Amino acid sequence: MSLFERFKAGLSKTHDRLVHEIKRIATSSPKLDADAIEQLETALLGADLGLEMTARIIASARQSYERQGQAGLQLLEVARREVEKSFVGADTSLFQASSGVTVVSVVGVNGTGKTTTCAKLAHRTQADGQTALLAACDTFRAAAIDQLKLWGQRLQVQVVAGAYGADPAAIGHDAVVAAQARKAGYLFIDTAGRLHTKHNLMQELQKVHRVIGRQQEGAPHEVLLVLDATTGMNALQQAREFNKVVPVTGLVVTKLDGTSKGGMVVAIHDELRIPVKFIGLGEQAEDLQPFDATQFAHALFQET
Image (cartoon, rainbow, N blue to C red; front, side, top):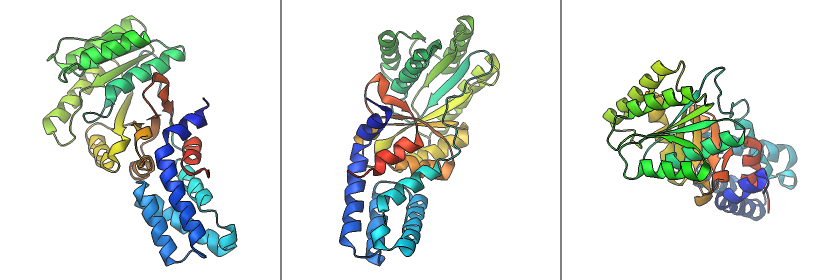
């Protein structure tokens, strides 16, 4: 399956709803009048594209109508172009340190898929010829360590773990030492899920980062915030709060195949300007894909 086919399949729920509504509006309205604009706005906001992107698409549609009239107005093409343009200049590559192990901390609230994301990232890294390690720093959630170990066995990635209830910062420290000793290219740290409203848990996350930073210069080199696409715009508030506590360098948006609100990727990037680095389009290890704005925009708005 090609990259575009993966994007198209994973975004099918969002695509089908958006394209159906936009085509209906374009064919039922003889001109881009106030009623058509209102319906278009409702459809775009319903996909969680956000106020800014919705306003830009509508403004661009009006300009196109003024220049070419209804016969030349391609609403889907206008929307695709505006979405793709919004990501121009964003660095979506996974950072790699110039020397030593690159430490990637994977953070987020409970249930977003952090553990699975860590394993899939390690798998991708090893497939690219790098050595990767996983650190089980979620020492609180039931079966979190076992889950990461199972992924490690399945994908042949070594896991550094301690006992349940152990200090996550101590596990992080040991994992960095192990990664350095094994000359690993990457270390992916699976942190415990925490609500962004819990001050003490956010402080604990800061401690983990301080400890690993003392062991490896510049660590963590990446802080990837995992967001569940099915939560829609609630993910935006999570991103705002996490970014205040631990500067987030990139976003991983999971479960896009399970929602019709995939536009939230655009809305979050629009407001926070944090690059989207990976998106989850399914359950398999290969379903975590590097974000590609062109493929994403085409998968959302390609006419069927």
